[in-house]
Length: 168
Image 1: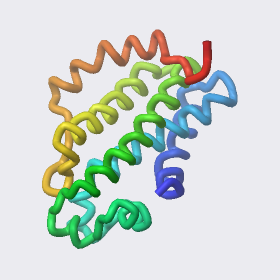
Image 2: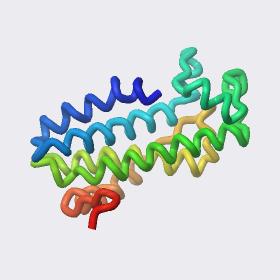
Image 3: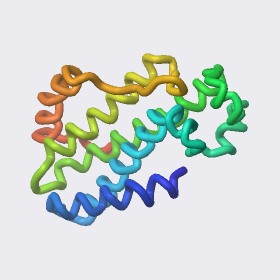
């Protein structure tokens, strides 16, 4: 899963950092993490839709570790093990958002746009959690008004980026 996210989104984040004008080499690492977070969110959001297309992006070893079978997913069973798996992956995505958003200050332009996109995707994680991780029969999404409410937060994050963990 990590390799897939790297190939389809991490490198996109790296390219975007160059387009938006990176101020130093650390910017690439921040952008890569943000790309990973957004792709992982896509995967979590789309489990049910992907199953309809005979695609499973969730690692089989993680499914097994949580006592989840692909047939459970196909049957639409949101079991306690499945919820635990989703919570585990949600936690990984949220950590990547924290790390990635800390790099906003390293971009020369486009900070608010990047922040808004990341906050919207992070909002999908909120919706997913609120649904009890029931993403097998419905897709978590933000309504237009919910996205609009994120605009001030995006501008604030662009102006005052979060600090990386462990920094003063």
